[in-house]
Image 1 (cartoon, helix red, strand yellow):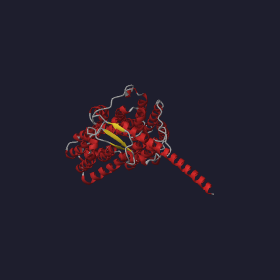
Image 2 (cartoon, rainbow, N blue to C red; image 1 turned 90 degrees about the vertical axis):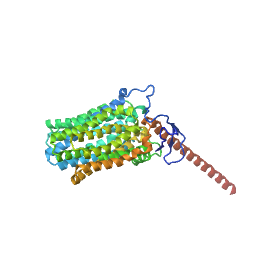
Image 3 (cartoon, one colour; image 1 turned 45 degrees about the vertical axis):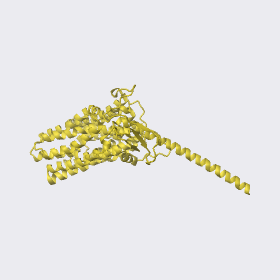
Image 4 (spheres, helix red, strand yellow; image 1 turned 60 degrees about the vertical axis):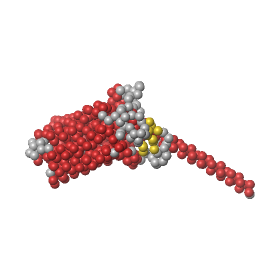
Length: 490
């Protein structure tokens, strides 16, 4: 799918849907008369998002699932350290979870485009209910072999990789185009609230009994499953038409062929490599220790930095409504290198936490906006595969960043760590200077374009079928005439 986009505000006010083969115009134009910062108003008869029971049931279900995930994930390293004392093994389990979730997001996106999305999320939840429930019983029985911990952690991460693109793809099925941005912004609150609330809950429960974090996570996934049953709207995807192939690679192809999404994902990958949470926290911890800070002071420093993400999730909706998308992306992209330069030159520790908090503040806002563009530009039948590709590309960059930060710090110290972060984030921000990004219309303006993109394809398929039938009919008449002529000759 390729959408030829004329920058809003230029002399041409139309967007033409171009066939994937780059051929002639398919015949349907999408009129664009909006200014870059203008939002599409809700249509008459549309319910406000807060009154959309289906979406709120999905959101609440995913909130319980996210809280359960964070509660269990903080308990894995605690359990490993308590039972084996090996920090290396605890780190290996964490890396294995991240890699598993990123790799499984690809087939997860493919499954999301082939089967009922609610059913797929229910299956993933129930697998984790059983997995973590049985694991908690084994912990009560004092059966905590390291291999078992590794298997449970990786199995749970696999379910996460499959369910994540499915849950995001379901949003477009439950909300109208005019509310996509608002819905994706609300999603960010859920994610960052779980990130802030899950670890303390998991740590407190682990202090009571080692099995409690995993048992509570199992219950959380069960509650999440029950809430999914309250979604009344069907969540089945469009049936595969004859001759259509929904292969996994198509998600990457769509992402590569869509100019806006392609430019933004390049920036997201570079930004994640430079400012992944684990990598930045590692840099802050190492810098604080090198300057003689206590463990409690370092913990406070990380809390200051982490608050930025939560605040960003709370203000994402209002900010997206009031600020033009182009300004948001440009500001967010160039905050990264500026912040890294400040980190390399600031001497105190508290200012480091405040600067990182400002960097994390942009994350929920730009994530919500990017996901709104993806939901608007990509047809529903391909949402899962494109989201799977996006999650894989954004997540796979994180381990590279963590490894690079640790290596540079050991070799050259904190100043060079932040200098390298400035260079990487600066190079990653260059695509946002493209005219396509600087002249972006709101996500809702592209919603009809994605629908129009599918229509010519279906019409072309019907035309091909008709031409094929006509050709077979002509061939049959020609054969009949030839047979008659041969009979007359004999």
